[in-house]
Length: 153
Image (cartoon, rainbow, N blue to C red; front, top):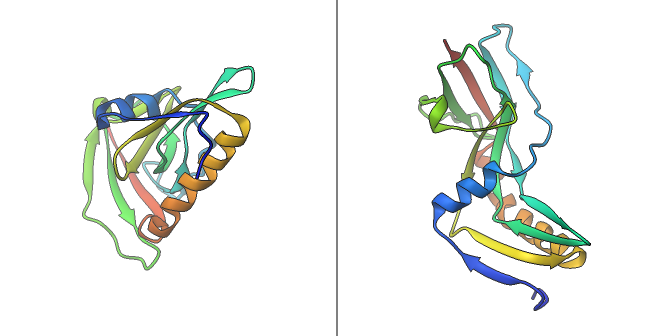
């Protein structure tokens, strides 16, 4: 389906987490609940793309992620995933060293299937990959509407 001008590599999940931490962080849509230590952020589909210059790119597996500014006073965060129908997960807590924090932004996300990387692709292929990877995750978005966050000090 995609042009032959890229190589696909399947690499262990640990490397995928590392690659995701090196991506540029997009804007954070934080909704305040009235309590400064409790807030809600939306989930979004994120396809990490890094520019190599000269119209060449690296693209890696998409994830469903929620992002928010890190709080310096936080020792950990407690999360609850909320689905479109209002169903909520059990609360779970992560200490800061267990989270993906880059440039002062916490990103909590879910990656599905085997991590895949596309190295040194052109603009056309990059655009096709972003579209394809986004479309593949779209059917799961009803399970990930928003993330309730509690800051633990």
